[in-house]
Length: 393
Image (cartoon, rainbow, N blue to C red; front, side, top):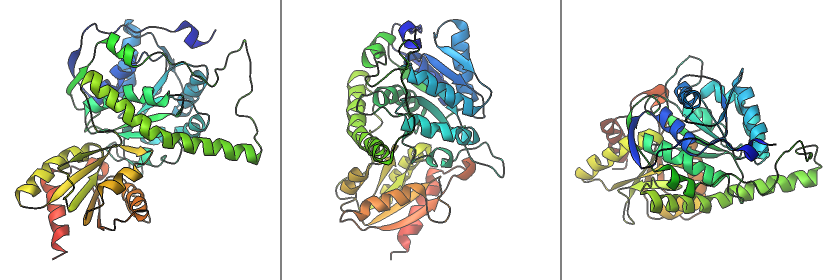
């Protein structure tokens, strides 16, 4: 009997409620309410609080998941693969070097089409050692096939974990998801998080029932064995097609979630202060972008014609959406946490490549800011943009 045939049940709340909780705990509550069946747990700062909270749920009898304490992050990813292949809904949380240690099996999970969901607390990589926010850890795996979401606040963390299951488990996707939040800025900071009633969430997110295959010792099959080049090529093309299809599915799921629960954070991206006449565009991500919303207001008060795009989903990349929004843009100002050493910021690289396929040719300004959790205040970001625009005079 597989795990999913004896599906454990979590105890949810009967009515919607609001809790003041950290980003780590928001991800944990989302996993609980998603009725996750298998949790693979190995601690690493600053993501430990997520799986510790799930441990409390399981130990207290309010979450019916199988909680597997493993000896390393690599083993945690292996446990997710094994459980997901049986048709179980799976979850884990990690950060930085833990994610890199998982990397081999993160690729395996994606290329095996297993819709596991992980909460990633973005943290700087050593050396030198730092436990503060930076997004290179997950962005470094952007080519793995995993869908990647970058959240700006704790409410979005909760909602995105829930929606990630709906999207990843869609029969036209079947890919893992990484739901990312900034270390400490979100993971350890308490904020209000609204949660729907369990019965309403169950209606939105039914039990996972894979349509392609489930491993079962009573009905053994061979999976992911040696493939000849012509079959291997088709498999990879199918993955590319599925991740492209995920764009519309993300939009549909986000629209449905908004209709049911009133929460919307954008779908592939979110705009602020942007219209068809805007000439100067800021592109950012994660919690930095929420602060830059204030920068946009400050700059508009000074007479600058500016708007903001927050890149919410890095993969699949919203290339067509960006081309449409950038048609009349004269300058783009990238403010991001993740450099690609030897070139520019990761988001800037992908965005400029997307615009190359269209008619827009804005002048680009590149800023790598907020490394190792350094504050990017609204005033500081506004000053960056003003200085950029002064160079055009």
